[in-house]
Image 1 (cartoon, helix red, strand yellow):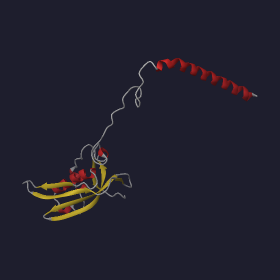
Image 2: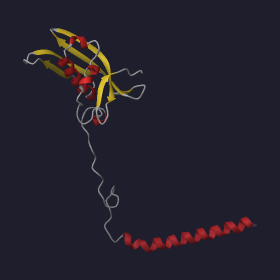
Image 3: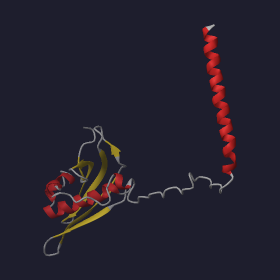
Image 4: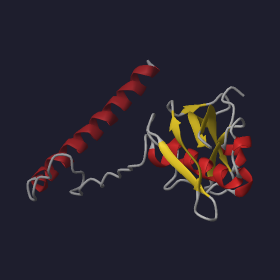
Length: 183
């Protein structure tokens, strides 16, 4: 008996609210036809925001930033394969490290050429760096990419395939250095 009274009061209240909403809607119908009808896809007569297109490698600024980073002097050797370091001078290692930064951000199998010269302007070494796989997440969450670094020096060719992983050095500086994706 008590439940019936309670439910009938709620039902009456809901019917009253529904009726007042219907009357309010009928009064506003004339205002809908007063102005122009908005075009499809536009909300509140505002055009959609322009789409931002980033063009720079397979994932643009996500893996490279707006420009290849400058490799700090202390990290040059960290971006060069360990087997290639003994064959190269400091200038040659810097050129190879900077080419590796660019190659890590480019499309797979797109070579980046590099060349080193001595203070007299004589050619001392050259080579290429090629990304041989797509960017992937390492076990600990770092972004990594496999690249092949090659060197031609004194008419001898040396090459090594390494995994480069992004290491953050504070601020927005992130450099691709030799790492291990499994650790």
